[in-house]
Image: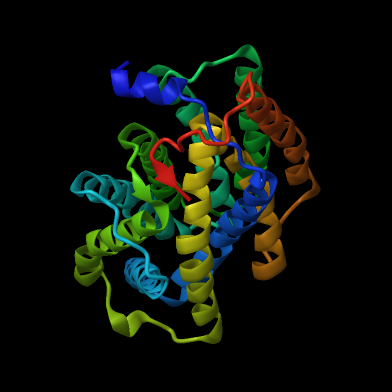
Length: 318
């Protein structure tokens, strides 16, 4: 492990009295994004939808920053780091995920991506020096078991495309990579401006592929497309991603990623409520081990001693 990684792993994390609220809002917005994404790719080619979404969110972030008179405090290294993270977390994760959404349900897409805490936990213990305790390991196993119960049932009764599933697995790999990159690169400066850089980098990365593979004539204008776009730009690309990187900062990679285990039941709930996707009683059985797994992982990740209120946020300010 490098000296920088060792320092980041050993540094105490900042106190956050609003952490429960941040977690709740993040989970609701992130799980709702799967349904909004499904609506978006139904009425618009996925790469066009994402390109416009990312560029609009990035420009909006910088416009708000200018109105608030915020000072640019990102170094060249910070801009590069945020851009790389944006390509992984925005362009690759959502690009692959949205292509998959065209042929699989929003609920199954949420299920596949929710497996990322396991991979993050293993990599965090190897690369970041985050301690893997027995309680944390048991929590991760329970989370996977709960997701597996739901996945097995959904696949047995559904007609989801194997190709779509493969794209969603690619999205899973991308979000794991983005999480690790954020912790390893540890960009400093204003997280709000950093989020703008990430969105613009993601939009510019997807743009040439959208131009080569999609046509504007394939867009079906509708009120629900506009609503999905507004939700994803304002509440997900801006608010949810801000909360995600904040949670990574204050909770650590493993603990923050564990909250993705709650996405399957919430994703299925929203899919049922909004899109009429099938949800069976057996699906709901997976919620119990998922909830217990999150409790064990996040409890085991809690600091053993009180933290100073003036502790650095690993170089990222929310």
